[in-house]
Image 1 (cartoon, rainbow, N blue to C red):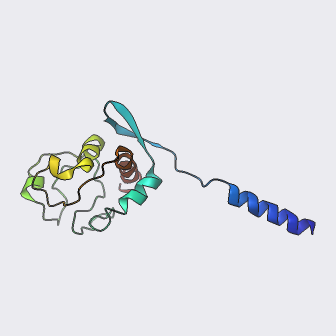
Image 2: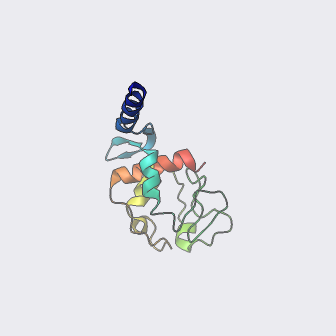
Image 3: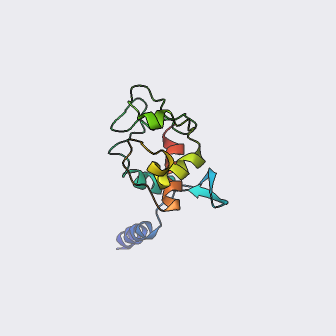
Length: 138
């Protein structure tokens, strides 16, 4: 009886324990002058919206280009992907700040882009996606 009770109490304690959360990732981006941090775990969940068109695997282009190594890359340069002239000629370097701003409204930053995604209006969702990319798309 004592052993069963101890096992039951241990199981209940484990179930009640909060799930481990990823440490916040400091970003090189701001929102209205406020420094941003992102949660890569939540960013992964938000990135599910992007996965129909993008992969984080190197060389795996889909409807959109692979986002592997996107941070620091010049727009329109992934081998094997047919970019729109607007994107290819934009001259954008994908800094964390530029990605943060772009994800708010992609068509506003690059009119004529092939990307039809309307954007992520929530600043924290954008920060979290960048944290996910920073940690997982190297």
